[in-house]
Length: 287
Ligand SMILES: Nc1ncnc2c1ncn2[C@@H]1O[C@H](COP(=O)(O)OP(=O)(O)OP(=O)(O)O)[C@@H](O)[C@H]1O
Ligand SMILES: [Mg+2]
Image (cartoon, rainbow, N blue to C red; front, side, top):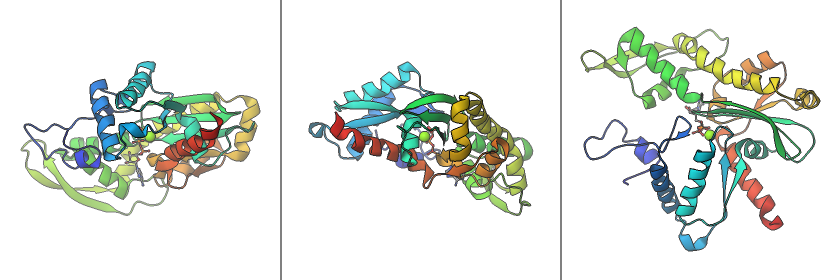
């Protein structure tokens, strides 16, 4: 293995022949348990975690993971030499990471809007009361932008460029669209690099559908909320984390539909992992 994470991402599309770029987890699913083993080992090396340290390890398992996937992750961690591996439901971790006391009787709604998965859960009394998820998220917005260029301009761009376009132009506000961005793609017929232009309005149009699927997860979750807890949610609101929650206008769009307050966490990409850390510190002395 040559590199992992950003190092590997930076060579996508730039390598050929004897170097391949693989994703052990693709679209929110474990694609290969063997790769996952290698990935976990490389991750521990990168973190300088040696076998004899035997750190206590807690992983967030989303409700979207199958039993086989959860087991392969736990096994990969144990194979890498970690002996004390525990898991915590992802939604619990997100709620804790956003600062909630999940052991309270009052309900809290924590939604993780990720790249490949959207998870929405209601937590009360230290457990998840209702949960909904779907395999949709930020990646689908990138793909919608790729599809737009393919069909409108006959041009192709890679996923990383599509994500850049999204970060520059995408939003779901009612503001009049103003910005246009230009960048390089490849002509689908000739393969030659071409300059393409894309404007805020077209991006907003094509992301409508994938955004709707994300919002549907939240609506579905709310529709399964017990009436007693629904009252709590009206006061405590819907709490968003995960990178996709940073999409401009998204929280307001959701609030408009659900008619209860919607808030985005501070540094939303780190909420879940911070929740794991807090949970770990809290349970350390109780074992
Ligand atoms: N400012 C932003 N505006 C819109 N989208 C953003 C922003 N910042 C990050 N994202 C998107 O958030 C996603 C990454 O979020 P996150 O790190 O929570 O996902 P992940 O944990 O890797 O995915 P998953 O939870 O589905 O496995 C990407 O699709 C990224 O493009
Ligand atoms: Mg995530």
